[in-house]
Length: 468
Image (cartoon, rainbow, N blue to C red; front, side, top):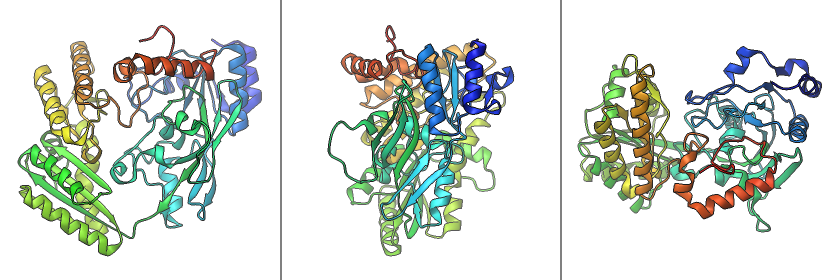
């Protein structure tokens, strides 16, 4: 419990209506989407400006109180869970689009702006922020950048790292540091902007962002191809790249995902094959037609047994539907079973995607649990969805072993345990295994320099002394 004087001071900073110690509210802030990790903060504070964030953190630093930044809570790795209690800073009200600067192809936004809301505004100007996470309608840009997010368009447009030009960050001391700026190139000094991206709130609170934007493409087309063998899907993906085609998106549904979608979406059953490849191309109308035709020919030459395509926006929505509902389909696949967001974000080199999918299938068979596999084959990022009965203690023990094997599988294939969801608490134990002891120790030293009192999002990424 925080001292009454600290609660009063926080109330003076942001107003009584923006502070809560109500047990019910504290419970609601005690978890993220993962739900596995839970811990209540001592207080929730909802600042309305960068200056208020700074004042909150200064007080916390003076008193040695843990601070956990939080956006929409859409993370799945426990990164926003206040496992040391203290102050939870809810950034959702710091949510203004400060500037749309079309001549310089950038926007300046506050951390609480929702991803989808930004693109809705940019569409009016013929631009977009070219990243498309599944949580676009709820995730905030501060959180998205903090975990180094991605999405289905990463294969062509890259991850969020390529679109952050500058940041305003509240450091653990309460000081505000500005990094970067509006220029598209910058070649002096250490790149502090990149240091904060993916740091998951352990080095400071991202309060404002300058983001690069790009013009909306003139046209799009979607090709959906079914294959009897997973190897054919992988060969097709690699061959598409070899023909100098870089799709906007390239997605995979394996047989487990196809079965889940068919049970969920009965109006249009997918073919019961080993894998389905979805490819989206974008650009000028002529270029899109040329690329779509080339993709179709490649798919057929590599053994596609069923193929459909369209450059009509309405039909594209229909073609994409199977991929868009697969998450919901897995969650409702079996009565009493729930999807657990663990082992769900492995990424491997594209050439090893078949080994990864088959490895996940072996884990499913070994432990007798359903695993539904889908993901972004164009960048090697798979999202295996593990299903268990959460009320069965034995299932949690089985889950732990299965998840560990999935993560070890990714590392054995020269991959990573997380491509876009972040490490948080969930995968923190793999930090040394993935990066090596020397690199992890460097990260710990950087954390110590920025946050000597260890108040900022403590307990995450295995960055505290004594953690491995």
